[in-house]
Amino acid sequence: MTSRRLPNTAIYTGLVVGAVITLLPFLLGLLTSFTSAHQFATGTPLQLPRPPTVSNYTELAGTGFGRAAVVTALMTAMILLGQLTFSVLAAYAFARLEFPGRDALFWVYLATLMVPATVTVVPLYLMMAQLGLRNTFWALVLPFLFGSPYAIFLLREHFRIIPNDLINAAHLDGANTLDVLVHVVLPSSRPVLAALTLITVVSQWNNFMWPLVITSGPKWRVLTVATADLQSRFNSQWTLVMAATTVAIAPLVGLFVAAQRHIVSSIVVSGLK
Image 1: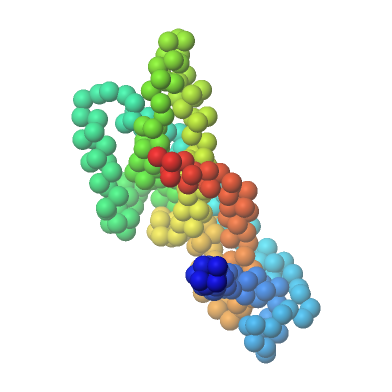
Image 2 (image 1 turned 135 degrees about the horizontal axis):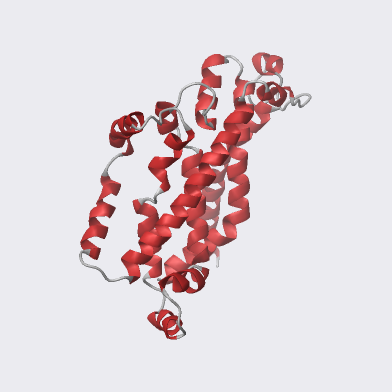
């Protein structure tokens, strides 16, 4: 028994150390956001706020950060809707429909995952400029609206393991392809869709390069760009920057807590495959 406990103790010790190293920067950022600028300048980062203050958050409200949060939320919601809609349709076509060149087209499309995102920034910028969409909301969302290779691959692999008997039974009952997709395939794919939702929201909420390139000025500024702008404008006010960072990551933490059950379910489904 003793020899069995020692490996378990080492594993849990390593997990605790890893958790502390991972979470400590977030905790310090949260504490700093409730610390006054004077205490932060005269004390140490490890000191607790004495007393805690929300002045950094009230000052943040006057910098236009709230508008950036709204723009980011709208952009993420629009991209999420498009990603789920078009990725589901494309994945079902690649998984269940028969048409010439289906597999070749899928693997060619999947090969675009090997192309770094930075390579496509200049062509996308030129396309948006030619269309007159630079510094608009549509320029933010259009490049990511019509699905992604990763999302289509993930959904296709899951759709392929759905039993054929289930789909054939739906067809025998008079269901067409869209009915099968909506009433049979999607209800059985909720864990995977939840995981894909979380991945899409996190990636788009944290997107920095494309919004920085395609927009200018405060009108369509997103949270990542607004936070970087605060760092340049208020380079000595780290309490204000940490308040902005806390506001930016709080929705993602809430989303993860709300969706963690579905994420675990998606991992179980993938493992069973």
